[in-house]
Picture 1 (cartoon, rainbow, N blue to C red):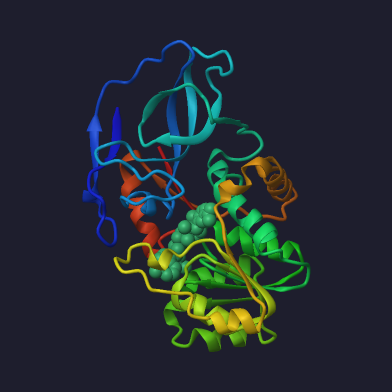
Picture 2 (cartoon, helix red, strand yellow):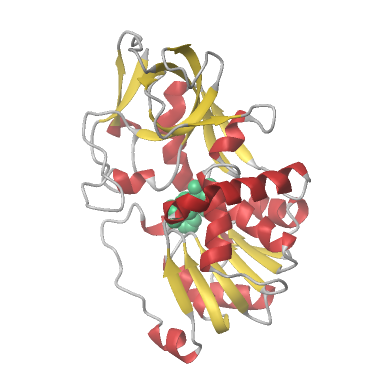
Length: 330
Ligand code: NDP
């Protein structure tokens, strides 16, 4: 069976040569353990941060050790009375085809309620990031104007849809014409901007939202954040969810550069980590699950086939190759 190790700390954009595949025997579960077979692996932009040797909210990956991310796995053998053969579990697991685990920190998922991959996206951490970021940090209110960047991705598609469920005007920013059309035609966004074809983002946002922005859900950082701030309304809120445009940069820009806007317009800007809301995850999963069942929420995903494609699928996030949640099916 195969395992994927982090071989080098990437410099700039990650390369497949930063990862190494090893072969070993399938492990045998001890008392209290289960043997898990990996079914779906989540690849996420935040993993790039864990590849740096830096202190953060989560431990950096160690060199020559397995990478880990959210995974859905099947119990193929159980020596733990809480789990039986055929159960599907999700949680943070290593990039291995098979692994043993005590089940601590893993939760069972029901494949009859949603597809297994949905538990890595809309019913997993990215759905919860959208839900809690928008509700608790953005404090989005019915009828407001919401702008979201990274809009066609895993978090972004859910953010925009929640905005529509709440009767808000929603504007999305994404990197291709195909994504922009998907947002307006399939997801009901009121407008969408292709940033890769736009020289003046401030003007483009103004055109799409002439009355200004009440909440900006920022997934990309940098100049898009500046342009959003140029359009923000009084008492606006900025949800600093992520800054993918900076993750592969070796020099980080200083900032924020818009203190005057923040003061003059009484803006609230706040970052967050979805795990801050861990105690309330059940609320989020329940709400997202009901919207999904009622057909109010659509669930976009890009599924790549094959364990050996995991590193490339991760790298492809930085080239915008995904629509919705990027997941690898093993
Ligand atoms: P996505 O599914 O959105 O995938 C990444 C997308 O980012 C790509 O599809 C691409 O779309 C876009 N992108 C890549 N490079 C750039 C760039 N240089 N400038 C602008 N856009 C770029 O990933 P997620 O939904 O998983 O994550 C979205 C954001 O949310 C990330 O910043 C991530 O770190 C953050 N996050 C934060 C969490 C938290 O707890 N705070 C938890 C989970 C995610 P395009 O074609 O549009 O460029």
